[in-house]
Image 1: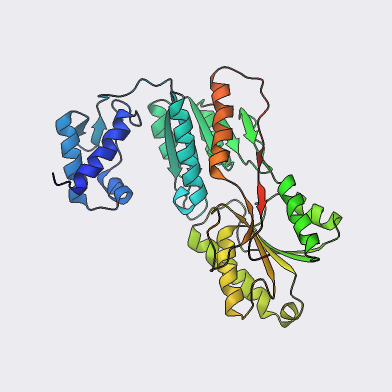
Image 2: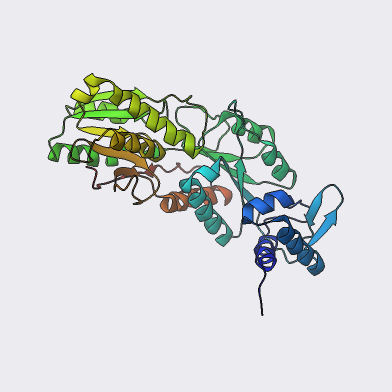
Length: 354
């Protein structure tokens, strides 16, 4: 039997409805939003919604759109939200959301990812949080502490944990789960010593990473120079902006003949997208990796090469990250209050660039 695109869309939405992603009376995404999600035209989406309407899974309400009826919904213990900003730009955030969803749903909790958009001036559109809260939210996991998101959860009386809160305080959070770089920094320093490298240049987005690494490098006898890229520390940009930022910063650095004459042994990028743009600029200037300069980056890509180079990297695995966070939050949801929050350990992975 021939399968149409609309059938596949209907199957996916039916799975969402049966899994409890949309509760009875809750509005489904608009036709335009569904077109973007499935990368299809309006005709296919409307055909899928008509099919679901005929099966009794949705109702169509004037000026509202498709609304879930609650047919076939699994009885969940409650609803947990994963809240982050501009997740479409991040492999790590998408992979983390998938892992959290699996763990919470296995434990009997309805799980919804809430991917917020950011306005050009840096403010976050938190309307989606309010809309989901109107249909019930029992807990929230906020990735990368943003004061604006925490304040909305505070106002709605939604308990939450913050992941990677940097230096900010979140007094109403049940916990701030921080990342632990110490062991991977030790491993990287050991590798630099083995290669007899002495000077490190860091291209950094202000405030994004633990400055403890620089102290460890100094204490270990390395010379360290830091170049701040042209970003505000509290603003999230898209992938193209990060690539361009890395390209511009490295191009400007190499345009100075004094810098070209005294290249560092190692260039460290604060972000894998910065590294992509920076490596393009290095190759355009005729530098060879690792012959002329070594490269290390913070990365969430896994072992995907950047600019045809397998980079040495300080890596955070979203699968293990999600497992640790889910296990801790599930303990909180079970009523256990006095448990210390975990730390998420990163690891150093050597690559061809070092």
